[in-house]
Image 1: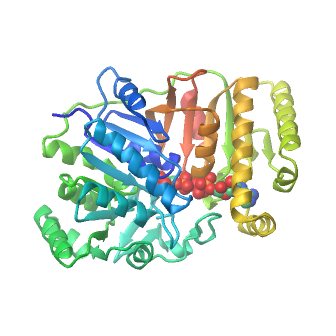
Image 2: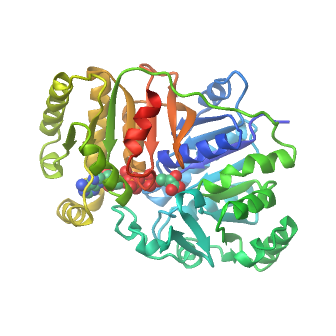
Length: 439
Ligand SMILES: Nc1ncnc2c1ncn2[C@@H]1O[C@H](COP(=O)(O)OP(=O)(O)O)[C@@H](O)[C@H]1O
Ligand SMILES: O=C(O)[C@@H](O)C(=O)COP(=O)(O)O
């Protein structure tokens, strides 16, 4: 039996930790690697836990880059996994199917299908614990269609079509089919496999799966446990470990992850403009010193905005009686201001400038001001910040809320506790709850 059962390729860093915590909750030992791994990083990660590793999750930053780059990085990761003897793969994208008509979900999935020589794979973005469900091929966020959920205003990939069969077809060359809830409701692995086979005979190799609750996900996991490639959000991953045990590829070894033991100052960095993050920021602003990044000034002069924030942070900590109090730095804004900045400076230019700024700033706060506990809000934002900090791998700790664990850096100095929050996740007290967990 090969020790590492599953190699996962995630298209952003918060998505990767979300996937990882779901696998951990199913009882797997998981290490997260940041960026395309080479053989050395894979071997080190494999050997980083005394009891071994069951799954490796690689966090790429391929969600909003040109599709050929996304394909190249994903295939490179797949080849590294294959050289390490891994035989099952999971392509993780956002539970809100974040992509555009050009890609990158369809093109990356098709490149993995080609590389693995498989005929079909499933697409399962649903994550019912976080309110994402799929019915008749339509994606819902709580009680709203995706296209009316706030995601239609996303700064990088506005989601204006909730019909995933239609939307995935626009970004793919293969035929897209639907495994509808009618089949899931039969609650039979054989019925699901038969239906997948029928769709395959019809040439429908990309299959959107209706999944409305955890019991649908459990059935689906059991039905696809032998497939070399599955794709989805993180919901399905919660049930794969049990399904792998059922087919005899995973040992039964319950695992409870420890909290990171890291002391030092706490910093919250929020670059997400989602409704959830904006509510969390508003709540936290009343509880700790906060700095709202002046995007205009930043586009004008990165260095002087950096100097201003650093000097504010130093003073804020000096003035706060409790040296352990957190600080909050955010660029979050409402759709109107985001739109205005994008019109003036260009969508990509403003996004990259803010990401780079938050990355440089956070590194400075770690190197010079003793920050050791970090909460980052936003997938692209988190990707930029962890890359600026030079972090290569993370150990997954306990869950803070659905899809967000505490994590701890492996093999880099200084050691950091990190919570990487998807923009959309968490209730309004998320930041406070996360900090209280560390004591
Ligand atoms: N005030 C702003 N104006 C324009 N773009 C912004 C602003 N604040 C953040 N952004 C950009 O919006 C994007 C948010 O994406 P991300 O961090 O992935 O959040 P989410 O998890 O909500 O998708 C980032 O590229 C970020 O740099
Ligand atoms: O599946 C999800 O919703 C998340 O894991 C995810 O991918 C988060 O992406 P961001 O909203 O860009 O943080």
